[in-house]
Length: 169
Image (cartoon, rainbow, N blue to C red):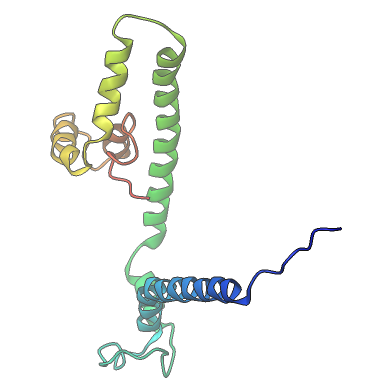
């Protein structure tokens, strides 16, 4: 006599289908809520002057125009902003990798008195919110006369973890 297999009941299958449908519906709603501010910004940027202040805001611009983009490019030196961002990012990443590797190697490979204390101090500074460091960093940078320079932006963030340096993921 061979054992018989029974097919799963239709009710649990429909229950799973209902759960999936609910999850996809909830995720779609969250996606729409998340994307809407970006969509609204794009529609506002492409709209003409009269449509910007319309209430309720339109979902699509009636007469799309790129005039606002041309005005922004001609009135602001955006290329200089990109150049500064790229330079600061490259210097910060390279410097952080160097400083972090130089600090991590002895902590990981060498046994010395106070090793746990140093590691604990590093971890303790990582839990500080970024706002705590702003004033101290500014005072230090201004006393070193590094304001308005790449060094004044890069140096305070080299040994900081990303969260305490003011970066947000």
